[in-house]
Length: 326
Ligand code: AHZ
Image 1 (cartoon, helix red, strand yellow):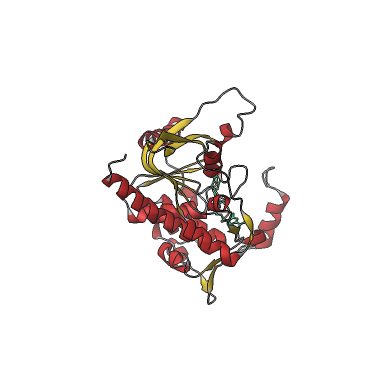
Image 2: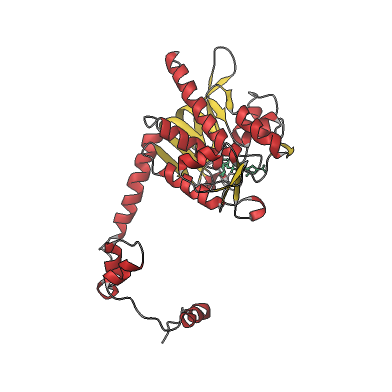
């Protein structure tokens, strides 16, 4: 008899499959595809199968030991990237690849990194990138169809998951997701104004509840350089540039303008720069400073703004090291 928890849909699915010839021998299973022998052996012997033993505290310690070691290690970092959208991840990939000696810390407020790059426009699947951003796809290893002046990735999630997996596999990169940047660390400069010297963080769920609880103080990360890629204005978006205005380091925001693909993409890539000492801004966050157009569902500028942000970061780090400014 089927267990009570089996849903009618599941029962239906089982019936729909109909009687099938079981694949028993590991060699038969392996021959069906490119499975490893190990996995084929497992599939041929479910009766003998069981997981290795575990005690709950082992799971707890396996996670917490690593997390707190990472927090300790990344309390002082070379580069913080705020936001793991298409621009932030492209910056992380470029910087992490070019400078494996740098410690890179990504802070992403969402549980799922990737920002607006899991879908194309209007929730459609395909992602369009205008050339020459196809060079970035080849560097990361994302397949695409060539349409002449632009290329199409069959699903935006293929771009984002491939880029994310390349970034996460890097030894010099740590992603703290579900963590929001709530403020910037600043130091006064002799010439006037401030230098950004790191970020102030909190669990995003805490950040979202400051209005409902008494003060819940944040944590900090000191960084030689910060790259902000928090996207255009929204509940968390355009975070750093809005904060720079409120601390009077920027006079005002230009405000993102209407959609113009042709203009918007060049403007974002060309405008990627250090906005105040210690803070580089890339991606759609820039459109809020510069009053640049939006481009909607074409992502080449996000990838190449990330590449440029990484390049600017390397130049600034070299320059400041020479001037002994850290
Ligand atoms: O969750 C945000 C997203 O993943 C994250 N983020 C924002 N504020 C943050 C904060 N602390 C930590 N205070 C924060 N993380 O930043 C990421 C931004 O990703 P995005 O995809 O929104 O920005 P992007 O500039 O990489 O790409 C934008 C792509 C475009 S263009 C466009 C249009 O023209 O309308 N719309 C989008 C989404």
